[in-house]
Length: 344
Ligand code: CP3
Image (cartoon, rainbow, N blue to C red; front, side):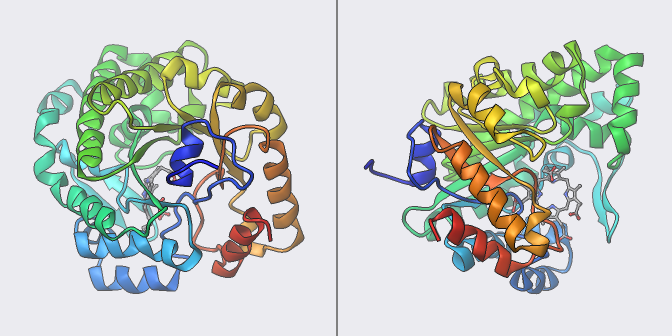
């Protein structure tokens, strides 16, 4: 069997009898130790910007469950803040930003090279986790993909159907292009700094890619990701990139070829047998258990887990969820899941 970290081997295309496993949103409110550390930090953004505490919550699920990956604790909207948007989290309501939706708003954004003043504590978190990581565990950095971050910046909040971003796309496509371009530049800067600080893999979260149809998908979900991957690989040739075009459906096929990503993360709407035949043929896939199954646990969790393992057994696979763990997930069901993946 190969040498080195199991997650990195899967991303390089190695087929493993037991796939590596980590979980989106593995740090979070479903864990009592997370709630305790978050209470010490006071609020979510202070937790993100306090390297000792952010490193602690990054490590909590790795310690508790023995996962193969540690994902940096931060948020995709920190880049918007570093570019100059005001950002806050209204308790129980999700993120709020000062909207960036006009030519003047976009012109006021800081240059990509200036984001590091704000984001330096995130790089310090990466450095701390890299230093303290158990052997065999890979450190995952991340950012939001430009389209998804733009949907929050344009609306100033999360919106059903990403209506305001689609409205701007129709009314002033050149403005949206400019915002996406600024975000792509900043994302390269941000992820390169994470890699420089010790991230061994990076993941691009495009949570709202599925709301883009036809040519819009190519223009806003494929092209910016391709540009980011190319720029990152020019600076860090060996750095694996995971892309997560959530909701892309049949457009998952070919996504690694068109973007240059090493691995495609699949949401729970994708049939694993279809993905084995149409996506895994191009390289590693990650996913795709429905996170809702971690609430009740039991036979449905076991059946779905076994079906995913069986479907992806013939190619490179990273076991994960189709979206993030929710606050209602039960830690004991997560432990059961990890045991199942490992052959329990
Ligand atoms: O996966 C991890 O464990 C790493 C940390 C991480 C967080 N957010 C922490 C977080 C990651 C990778 C993200 C990504 C993220 N953030 C996405 C993309 C993935 C997805 O879920 O689609 C998006 C869209 C965001 C924006 C965001 N941040 C929203 C919409 C919310 C509110 C929803 C909620 O669950 O409250 C957040 C807050 C947030 N980000 C929390 C965590 C742990 C909850 C904050 C808290 O402690 O109250």
